[in-house]
Image 1: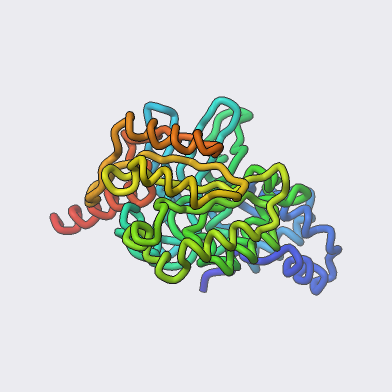
Image 2: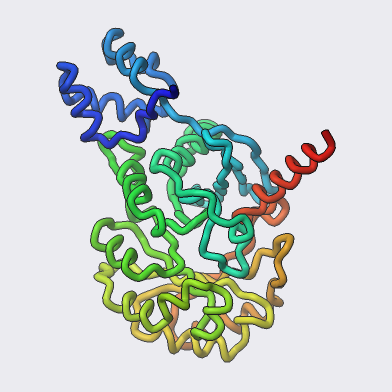
Length: 353
């Protein structure tokens, strides 16, 4: 039988394990620092522990590590990882370098079950939720590939899956990411979670964490949003906006609304006007994202002039607006694309055997 993964234990659970074996509880902090700050891959590396304790822990536990099945480097510096999980499923992460930050976009589920019409991951369907260790291991493994003193500075939970549909494991992973004494040590203000709009879980997340919130909006009306995002049939725009207005957002923070611009679907001047009216009174910013085309999709990227017009209308209404320029087009950086391509190649190879 496989040994349990030590990273699936909470800090308190591991403290209990140590005390039951007559070891001081502070050893838990030392082991956790080796795992999450020094990124140890074996217990033998933990040289400030006694040999007997290292041997005991190694007898009882394994240390998980994601396998890099595929790594694609874009001409713009974006790097995409296809990670292989222990059960042979795979997930994707995207490393995005910018002038003063290095952001990793991570996944919280293998696949996704929410069926957003424009999303490449939706074509894969939901395979399973990720364990907390599989979520934060994406950060540890991506950091191992970096040269010199380069480190991931920001994390966005915007990869494969819906984080709030895997709430417990996602929050547990956030605890490891943000802890500064023994964890990875990324400030909550540098972590953003994106959700399709699961209203009860949004309220719970804001009560229990200090991270940034992003809402995948993508439409100014229920009619358009329900066609693009089936979740809107359960949580309407009215419910979602009421939730956002009631959130205790600190003065220096804003809710981010993400809006993928789809040619001829949600990118008109009228759509922009309705969006501005929808967001009235919410302290927020809007990320406009020209659609990133992928195989199997019926949607197209808008013309640059239409993107600019949409942006200017929002500006006119006093909204803070960013246009996210496409990254990694040459490596299929939209979530689900690299996995879909790899699955097709694998199935093709099997068919030729």
